[in-house]
Amino acid sequence: MDFLSRFSRNRGALVGALVILLVALIAVLAPVFFPTDPLRIVGPPELWPGDDPDFLLGTDSLGRDILAMIVHGARATLLIGLFASAVATLIGVTVGATAGYFGGWVDEASMRAAELFQTIPNLIFVLTIVVILGSTLHNIVIAIGIVSWTPIARMTRAEFLALRDREFVQACRSMGMGDLGIIMGEILPNALPPVIVLSSLVVAGAILFESAVSFLGLGDPNVASWGRLVGDGRQLIRSSWYICAIPGVAIMITVLCLNLIGDGLNDALNPKLRDR
Amino acid sequence: MTAAAPLQVHDLSTTLFTRRGTMKAVDGLSLTVGAGETVALVGESGCGKSLSALSIMRLLPDPPARVTAGRVTLNGRDLVPLPEPSMLDIRGKEIGMIFQDPMSSLNPVATVEHQIVEVLTTHTALGRTAARQRALELLEMVGMPDAARRLGAYPHQLSGGMCQRVMIAMAIACHPSVLIADEPTTALDVTVQAQVLALLKRLQAEAGMAMIFITHDLGVVAETADRVVVMYAGRKVEEAAVDDLFETPLHPYTAGLIGATPTPGAARAARLADIPGMVPPLNELPAGCAFAARCPRVMERCRHERPALTAPRPGRLVACFAAEQDAA
Image (cartoon, rainbow over all chains, first blue to last red):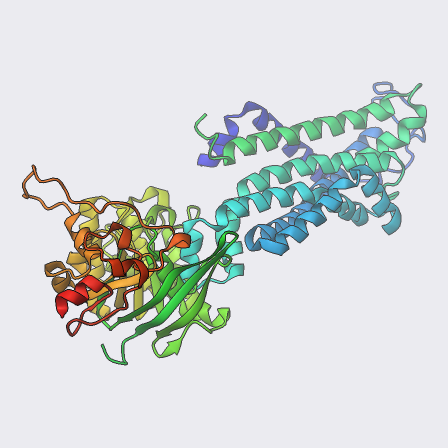
């Protein structure tokens, strides 16, 4: 298809997409590779990578298999990223579409509300929400969604402002379509491409937020996300730095690849760049 | 036209409320369009033609524009006081509209079929499959070449003429009794223009639709209209049957418009007559006749007093002191 060929013309995006697919595959197949609980103690503590062929990436301070935790952690990390981005997109598109379409005081009110959210430093805001609601997986997802929706709302609003006075929207009104039908059926499909790009970048941002929260020890204690692994290893960072470094590299590669995908989507979906 | 006329506009006024004050963009317009009749609304840019149409459809951009007086009676019901939900039912079902630029009047990311089906399912009880079948019939009805294949096409894959055919198919999909065509051929080239005009005339004759045809092209008027309403600065200045109007224009503005239309075969040496000056801005309308400053037959009286519409002969209306003198 047209879209795929434009997307794959961007080499970086193609590599990024392949890596993310691989990570997703590993995440899905985690129970096949490591059927037992990854948080179980299985060997001697602080085994360096390569010391023991049974534990390819070594063990942590308690003697847990780091490879098993990385593989299972991919699940948690990707799911948090995706769901947090979904929450942010849902809030952002709803607020942005309403503000841009109706304008007037609705627009004023929602944009001032968005500014209120933007003035609070993001990480502190996430931590505050998590502390208040409690450190569970879905509270973290909601907290990240709540701090990440504002750029999506502004982007959606701008698209709606530009599209709502276009003639085809007027034509739809002349055919008796209601506001909801026009917003969902006519304007939104036209406004979506830049929003999709932004949402893909929010996934990367959400993974970083979750890592930071877990690193600070506020993550869900029952879930072995990558950020938590980095956090667990921080006391030993001077002697056994690999405990922090391995999940850190996993986070870095994943976030980098998500950003590359965002770039590729932008190339593929943005009509102005299409003929470059 | 009798009381059975599907569309009667009575004394319609639309006011723009802007930061620089209020101005009447449409001032006391009355209009009757009978079944099967075409009334052309003619005038220069900014004379209130399109705003009149939008006022009838209740699609005015509010703010700044609002209907401040008058009645719009569609099939016996006054539209002006109707709540918006009732208007949603009427638009597209009892009254349809076609716009100037067909290429941008279709949703660029939806297929032709999707857009026609959408109108049908909004207003009728047709199921998806039946609506698709009907969409195909409609496309064939508006003379779309290779209609079955075009159903899956996106607007950018169609020419301007084909897009306008799709727009027309959508506007007539629910058999409206009134069709408003706002410069439907202005954006099309001349051969396509003629095809679209012929199509509109054919569809109108088949369905007995009342049609308001907004244009500034007098050639198009002569070809399509039964009656003509000439507007100037928001007011009706002349109304007549089409042949009558071209033969003996009573208002100097109408005469100017007709004189400013090039005629093939006329002596090249003769300079095309033009109307000097410009339409006065709505917030600087003079106390007298709005056309006075540009009028070749201006009299002292025109500058202080506004001429009312009078009927010098049955079936004709004109708002001009000079024309009154001629008739007397």
